[in-house]
Structures are given as C-alpha cells and as structure tokens.
Length: 250
Image (tube, rainbow, N blue to C red; front, side, top):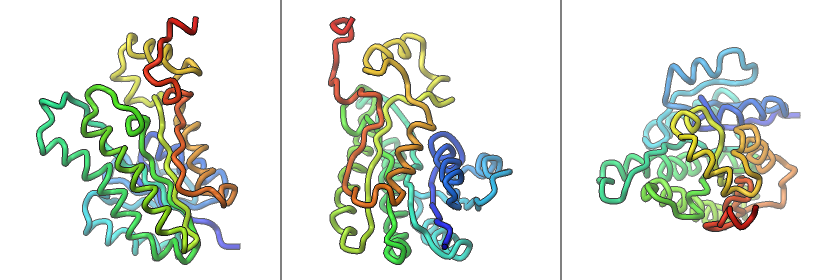
C-alpha cells in the first residue's frame, strides 16, 4: 500500500509543525515547506518521514519549482495543507499598500499558487486540500483590515476550489482557528487580552496547536471522504457567540 504524502506549508513552527507531527503519527510522510531556512532545518531535524523544502509560497517561480521537487522526492501528494501565513496587524489609517500586499501575497496568493500547482498531483490521487484561514475571516475585529480580509478571501477561495475540483474527486475544506496558545500569541498578548479572550470564548480558554492539527488531519484523511466545501471554526465557540456579553453568562 502506498504511503500517503502530505505537503504542509508554514511547517517550521506552530500549527504547521503540529500538523506535520500528527500526520507522521498517522503513518503519513510529509513535505515540510517554509521560507525560514534555519527554523525549517531545526524543525525537520530528527523527524523520520519528512523532507524539508525551502519555498516562499508568495513567489510563483519558487512554487513552480517546489512542487516538482516534492513529487520527485515522494512520487505523489495526497493532501495539501495551506498553512503559511503572516499576521501583521494595524489600524486602517496606517495600513499602507505595501503592508496590505505583504499580508495578501502570503495569506491569499500563496494559497492560490500552491493549490493550483498541486492540482495535477491531487487529481491523480483524488486527494484533499485543507486551507487555513482564521476566525478573523469570519468575524471582523480591530486592527485586522488586511489580515481579516485575506482570511475571508481564503474562505471564499476554498468554496471556489471545492466547486471546481470536486469533479476530479478532490476535496477542499477550510479550518478557521480561533485564539490559539502559540508561543507568539503568548509573547504579545497581555494578561488583560488573555482574560478577555477567556471571557468571550464559551470553552473559556485558548485552543492548542495540537487541537487545530487534529481537525486539519481529519479533513485531509479518508475519514472525511464526503466532506468538501466546508468552513470549520476550531475556536472553542468564539464565532458562535458574536460580540458576546460575558457578564450575562456568569
């Protein structure tokens, strides 16, 4: 039986690395894609069944070279996880076009480019695409004009991909993480922000990278063989509560 192969972008840290490890636990092999060479090298070290590939997914020429390299190494691709992204927050007034494009070119262009380049391989395997958006693509928030808009576009792109690629047996779904306890988040979130998120989320806590990875790997697997075009908020109920009035719940 052919060992399944997943291509994971933004695999050097965070949700991408957690997803890589969960695929390995499930018996898959993984092409780890990232543009941060030192972080990617360190992340791949000691992981059996992975191959690291340096690629900036926002650059068409790099993506066009990376996908054939992955296929040469593994022979096939059964799942693509478009996880690479940048989080650059700021007020609308101070978001110049360069900042806007910096966010869009990775968060949106990268998803488009990698998915498109992998379509022939996914048609061969009747594989799956899992795009990683954000709760910020489902509900607006301050300082996220570029980030939230890019993630909302990824949600719509997912639906377009599902509609067009379904005839090939290729499934496409989207995961929208809510607040996740990553090293970066914990480094920049003040205690007031942490307390506010806990109050606003029905499960009263941040999610973990592992919890998001569990949803991603499920959607990539045959266990989700009749699931496509879906937007899954892995957010502890954050999106379902709208603005929310935490004081009314106590």
